[in-house]
Length: 132
Image (cartoon, rainbow, N blue to C red; front, side, top):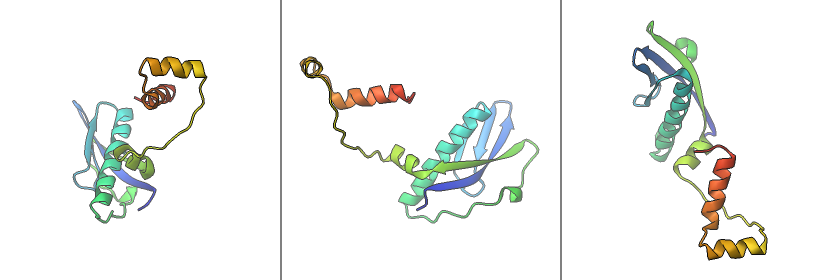
Protein backbone atom coordinates (compact mmCIF):
# COMPACT_ATOMS: atom_id res chain seq x y z
CA UNK A 1 0.00 0.00 0.00
CA UNK A 2 1.24 3.41 -0.94
CA UNK A 3 0.67 6.66 0.92
CA UNK A 4 -0.06 8.78 -2.17
CA UNK A 5 -1.67 8.06 -5.52
CA UNK A 6 -2.24 10.33 -8.52
CA UNK A 7 -4.61 9.51 -11.36
CA UNK A 8 -5.98 11.48 -14.27
CA UNK A 9 -9.64 12.39 -13.94
CA UNK A 10 -11.65 13.44 -16.96
CA UNK A 11 -13.97 16.38 -16.34
CA UNK A 12 -16.79 16.31 -18.88
CA UNK A 13 -18.69 19.58 -19.14
CA UNK A 14 -22.42 19.71 -19.82
CA UNK A 15 -25.19 22.27 -19.30
CA UNK A 16 -26.18 20.62 -16.01
CA UNK A 17 -22.67 20.36 -14.49
CA UNK A 18 -19.48 18.36 -14.64
CA UNK A 19 -19.28 14.58 -14.83
CA UNK A 20 -16.05 13.13 -13.45
CA UNK A 21 -14.53 9.79 -14.41
CA UNK A 22 -11.17 8.08 -14.08
CA UNK A 23 -10.14 6.18 -17.24
CA UNK A 24 -7.87 3.83 -15.25
CA UNK A 25 -10.54 3.08 -12.64
CA UNK A 26 -13.85 2.04 -14.23
CA UNK A 27 -16.70 2.77 -11.85
CA UNK A 28 -14.88 5.56 -10.03
CA UNK A 29 -17.30 8.36 -10.85
CA UNK A 30 -18.51 11.64 -9.41
CA UNK A 31 -20.10 14.91 -10.46
CA UNK A 32 -20.01 18.58 -9.53
CA UNK A 33 -21.47 21.99 -10.28
CA UNK A 34 -18.12 23.83 -10.45
CA UNK A 35 -14.48 23.03 -11.10
CA UNK A 36 -13.53 23.73 -7.49
CA UNK A 37 -16.21 21.37 -6.23
CA UNK A 38 -15.17 18.91 -8.95
CA UNK A 39 -11.62 18.68 -7.66
CA UNK A 40 -12.88 18.05 -4.11
CA UNK A 41 -15.39 15.47 -5.29
CA UNK A 42 -12.77 13.76 -7.46
CA UNK A 43 -10.36 13.57 -4.52
CA UNK A 44 -13.07 12.03 -2.32
CA UNK A 45 -14.12 9.55 -5.01
CA UNK A 46 -10.54 8.53 -5.74
CA UNK A 47 -9.70 8.02 -2.06
CA UNK A 48 -12.82 5.93 -1.41
CA UNK A 49 -12.37 3.88 -4.57
CA UNK A 50 -8.70 3.11 -3.88
CA UNK A 51 -9.50 2.30 -0.24
CA UNK A 52 -12.08 -0.20 -1.46
CA UNK A 53 -9.55 -1.77 -3.80
CA UNK A 54 -7.04 -2.06 -0.96
CA UNK A 55 -9.64 -3.64 1.34
CA UNK A 56 -10.62 -6.14 -1.37
CA UNK A 57 -6.98 -7.03 -2.07
CA UNK A 58 -7.23 -5.79 -5.66
CA UNK A 59 -4.14 -4.61 -7.49
CA UNK A 60 -4.15 -0.87 -8.09
CA UNK A 61 -3.19 -0.20 -11.71
CA UNK A 62 -0.39 2.09 -12.81
CA UNK A 63 -1.87 5.43 -13.87
CA UNK A 64 -1.98 6.37 -17.53
CA UNK A 65 0.20 9.34 -18.41
CA UNK A 66 -1.83 12.52 -18.85
CA UNK A 67 -0.60 13.00 -22.43
CA UNK A 68 -1.91 9.53 -23.34
CA UNK A 69 -5.51 10.26 -22.31
CA UNK A 70 -7.83 10.67 -25.31
CA UNK A 71 -10.51 13.31 -24.89
CA UNK A 72 -13.65 14.65 -26.54
CA UNK A 73 -14.09 18.38 -27.19
CA UNK A 74 -16.07 18.95 -23.96
CA UNK A 75 -13.57 17.09 -21.75
CA UNK A 76 -10.50 18.21 -19.79
CA UNK A 77 -7.91 16.05 -18.01
CA UNK A 78 -7.24 16.92 -14.36
CA UNK A 79 -4.53 15.27 -12.30
CA UNK A 80 -6.01 14.25 -8.95
CA UNK A 81 -3.85 13.20 -6.00
CA UNK A 82 -4.97 11.57 -2.79
CA UNK A 83 -3.07 11.07 0.46
CA UNK A 84 -4.27 7.64 1.53
CA UNK A 85 -3.59 7.82 5.29
CA UNK A 86 -6.24 10.58 5.46
CA UNK A 87 -8.60 8.73 3.12
CA UNK A 88 -8.24 5.52 5.14
CA UNK A 89 -8.79 7.35 8.43
CA UNK A 90 -11.95 8.98 7.08
CA UNK A 91 -13.43 5.58 6.33
CA UNK A 92 -11.95 3.62 9.24
CA UNK A 93 -11.55 6.09 12.06
CA UNK A 94 -8.99 5.22 14.69
CA UNK A 95 -9.31 6.89 18.06
CA UNK A 96 -6.43 8.07 20.21
CA UNK A 97 -6.42 8.74 23.93
CA UNK A 98 -5.47 12.28 24.99
CA UNK A 99 -4.80 13.53 28.48
CA UNK A 100 -5.75 17.11 29.22
CA UNK A 101 -5.71 19.48 32.15
CA UNK A 102 -8.59 21.78 33.08
CA UNK A 103 -9.33 23.78 36.23
CA UNK A 104 -11.06 21.77 38.96
CA UNK A 105 -14.04 24.16 39.16
CA UNK A 106 -14.65 23.67 35.41
CA UNK A 107 -14.42 19.90 35.77
CA UNK A 108 -17.00 19.94 38.60
CA UNK A 109 -19.43 22.12 36.63
CA UNK A 110 -19.03 19.99 33.47
CA UNK A 111 -19.58 16.73 35.35
CA UNK A 112 -22.66 18.17 37.07
CA UNK A 113 -24.03 19.12 33.66
CA UNK A 114 -23.34 15.61 32.29
CA UNK A 115 -20.92 16.90 29.67
CA UNK A 116 -19.21 14.28 27.49
CA UNK A 117 -15.61 15.51 27.54
CA UNK A 118 -14.49 13.54 24.48
CA UNK A 119 -17.38 14.76 22.35
CA UNK A 120 -16.92 18.35 23.53
CA UNK A 121 -13.22 18.28 22.66
CA UNK A 122 -13.96 16.77 19.23
CA UNK A 123 -16.58 19.45 18.51
CA UNK A 124 -14.24 22.24 19.63
CA UNK A 125 -11.36 20.90 17.50
CA UNK A 126 -13.60 20.57 14.45
CA UNK A 127 -14.86 24.12 14.92
CA UNK A 128 -11.32 25.46 15.39
CA UNK A 129 -10.14 23.63 12.25
CA UNK A 130 -13.24 24.54 10.19
CA UNK A 131 -14.16 20.88 9.69
CA UNK A 132 -17.81 20.04 9.11
